[in-house]
Length: 189
Image (cartoon, rainbow, N blue to C red; front, side):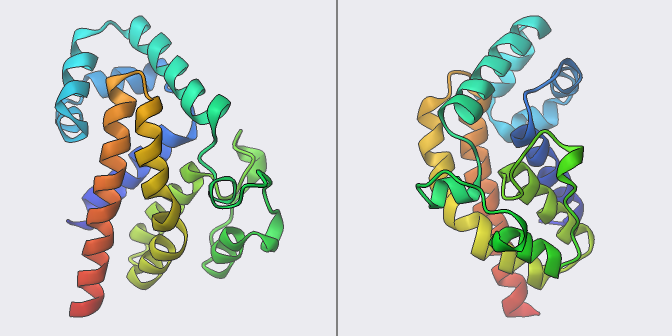
């Protein structure tokens, strides 16, 4: 797995988890058969066979149901049953960001939790871009891997669209492969 691919996938996953898909995202998805094949065959067939407005309605309904109404992809919510977000450096993820020079301007996003999966994936993208493999491994090991894998496995049953069902599998597979890639790098490097 090369860093260019990893950068692209982390950016894509960050976008997928950050907000409902808009029409531009859907148009881009429809025109990228290579990405659709990577996500899954069922998604590829469904996206290519379905008109943009139907995709827009169904994807937005599914995202809202899965990631806003029923549960939110926020580390502290998933790992701590209190459903409260720690603010500032009390939040272990914010402390990790701060230590690694990643500034999260919460005023620039609708996401209100610094440990939201969309932001955590964007942070991984930044670490890949900076080629900071040790930090990538630490963040994946300490913050993403412990909750995202079981979270996505559980969320798959809630998905009504092929896209979000396949995305749940894809996230698990990609993060597992990336974790293994980083472990191999630390053994060899």
